[in-house]
View 1 (tube, rainbow, N blue to C red):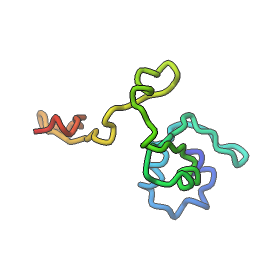
View 2 (cartoon, rainbow, N blue to C red):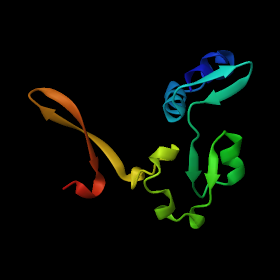
View 3 (cartoon, helix red, strand yellow):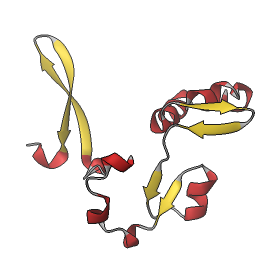
View 4 (cartoon, one colour):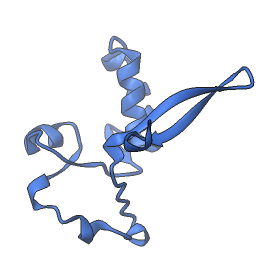
Amino acid sequence: MRDYFVKQWERFKDYPWGVLAHSTHLRGDGTFENGVEKPRIRVTLATGIPRERCEQVNLGYLDPATINLDEWQDRQGEDILLVSRAGEMLYRLIRRNELWIRQTSVSSAWP
């Protein structure tokens, strides 16, 4: 989140701004007060990255081998969102009437 970096600018001022921007976009809004980060959302990765590394950067961890996707479907009412094939979501620019427009598509649907 933005406050996390801004309120510790001396610590992060030499990091590439693209890295800081991506980190801010990943976590969304939140607060950073008295040295305590309070994110608006919790991000959990189902990944081969070790649990310890995920926790070190304040991300949740799930072992992908233990996940049954059916258990995660249709749980928005519990503030759980499953985005099927999220890793395959791609963006491309298309030109329409002299304007460049960002088009969202899933890779398998592309010609």
